[in-house]
Length: 509
Image 1 (cartoon, rainbow, N blue to C red):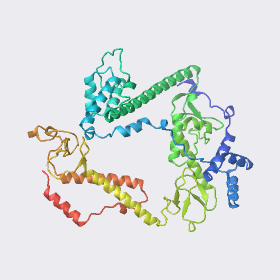
Image 2 (image 1 turned 30 degrees about the horizontal axis):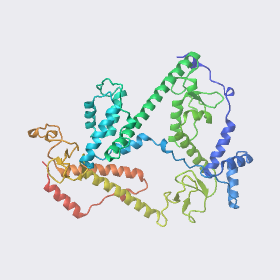
Image 3 (image 1 turned 180 degrees about the vertical axis):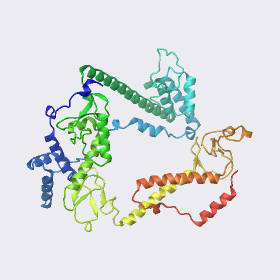
Image 4 (image 1 turned 90 degrees about the horizontal axis):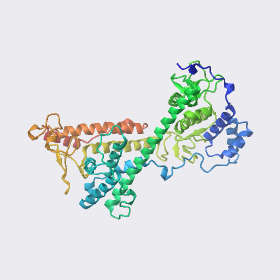
C-alpha cells in the first residue's frame, strides 16, 4: 500500500475549531423549528442575550406572546423559491410533450403531408452527413415523429453503442437552421419547427453535460496525479481505498480520522434511514466524534442536508418539554395550543406550508366531518381509482389514431373502425400486423407467435385482475390510513349473471 496511507492521524489542535459556529447554528435551528417565520436579524440579537441557549430563548418568546408582544417576522423564511423558467428541466418538459405525442393520422391528410415535408427539410439540414434515405428510414421507424427521430440521429453521432451509420462528405454550403421555416404561418410547419427546436435544445444540453462530465473526469485524474507526486494520498478509514486528501473529510475528534466523501455520504444516508441526525465517526477505533459543519458541506447535498435538519428539528421539539406543544404533520412548524378537546384543528403559520390539519388523525382538516367519515370518503376516492384502472385494462386504443375499442368476440386481428384509418393491429401485443404475426401456420404464421384465437373472457379476466392488484397496491401505499375493506369492490348479482353468460357464449378455442 501507499506509504502515505500509513501516515499518523492529524491532531485536532492542528485544525480550525468550529465549536462556536456549531453552537450558533444549533440555536438558530432549534428556534426556527418552533418559530419558522421569525426575523433572522431579531433572532440573532435575542439569542446573544440568552447566551445562545435555545431552551431559554424559546421560553422567553412564548412568554412574550402570552403577554401580547409578537416577535418580528420575515416575509417568507422557509418558502422555497420557484425556479425561473430557464431553470426548468427542458429535457423533462420536452419528453412529456413529445414522447406521447398525438399520432399524425389524427391531424388530417394535408397536415401530415406538410408536416413530413417540413420535418425532412429540417432533419437533412441538421444532419447533412447522413444520407437522405437513411434519415427517411429512421423517420419511418419512429412513426414520422420528428422529436424521437432527431434524438436517434444525434445519438448515432456520438454514442459508441449506436448502430454504425453511413456518412457522406459534406460540402461547404449548408442551410442555416435558424432561417428554415422561421416565418411560416402554416400550423403543420410550425409544429414541426417547435418539435425540432425542442429536440435540438435537449441534445445540446446533453452534449454540454457530456463535455462537463469529461472535463470533470480529466480534472480528477490530474488531481490524482498531482496528489501522488506531492505525497498527499491517504487511505479511507471505511472502504480503505486510496484518495487524495483534498477529496476526503475528517471527524472533529482530538485525533482526526479521514474518510472519502462517498463513504461519508453513505453514512449520512444510513443515519437518515434510522431517523438520526448526528453523523458520528466511522472509525473502527471507537471514536464517537462528529463532523463539523464545514466538513459536512463537503459531502452533503441540499437534499441530505434538509433531511438531517428536519430530523434534528423534530428531535429538539420532542425533547423541549414545552407544555401543550402541537406540531404540523406536514412540516416542522410547532406552536403552543390549547387541549385538543377545545381546538381540534392545527393552523400552520409556516409561510411555506400554511395547511390546516386535524390534530386527532393528523390529516388535512375535514371539519365538520369526523375522522372516520373522512377516512371513509378517502376510501371511496381510492376505490374509484382502482375501478378506473380495471376499466382501462379492458380498453384498447388504435396505435395509429388513438380510437378506443373493446373486443367482444372473434380473432385477435383487429381493424380500426375509424374512417380514414383502418389500421390492423394485434389485440394481444397492440402492434400493427397481418396474419403472419399470429400462430396460425395456415395463414402464414408460426408456432409461438401471438394467438389468433383464444378465450376473450379469460384474457379480460386476467388483465383486469392484474390491473386491480397493481392499482390496489398503489392506492394502499398512497393512503395508508384507509381501511382495506373500503377498497373492496363488490359486484351485484346481475353483473355476476351477465359475466357467467358471456363466459358460456365465448368459451374460447
